[in-house]
Image (cartoon, rainbow, N blue to C red; front, side):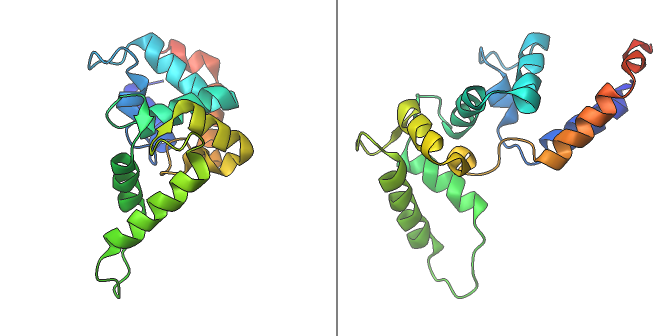
Amino acid sequence: MNRKKLQKLTDSLTKNCKHLFRAFDKDNDGCITVSEWVYGLSVFLRGTLEEKMKYCFDVFDLNGDGFISKEEMFHMLKNSLLKQPSEEDPGEGIKDLVEITLKKMDHDHDGKLSFADYEQAVREETLLLEAFGPCLPDPKSQKEFEAQVFKDPNEFNEV
């Protein structure tokens, strides 16, 4: 498989996945090693719920401190909602949405989401896995990627 074809496949798989690089770069060295790339793809394509929860939490934890704060929620929700022309201050609606989210997901009531909070909420309602925006490939993109990559294993032997 040539570089352009692999790049096109990868782009289609990850088109809705913001912060992919940071989540794949497990050692935070600014580079994605082959093992980090393969592990990331395995989570994308065949990951267990636990692996996907950990991946999504890492994506949503924008500053890497182990928690999803109100500010991080606000930032992610602000970027995922459409502004209505009649709204004067859409920030107020987003703040309300953050508070509703905390009531639903913040089980220890400390004003931020730990992984334990997030995990419990997702286990209760799996739709909350991507509560703050898409970070996993959609099923159609996943199937297309797998169909292309796995259709001819010898294609990877091309030079």
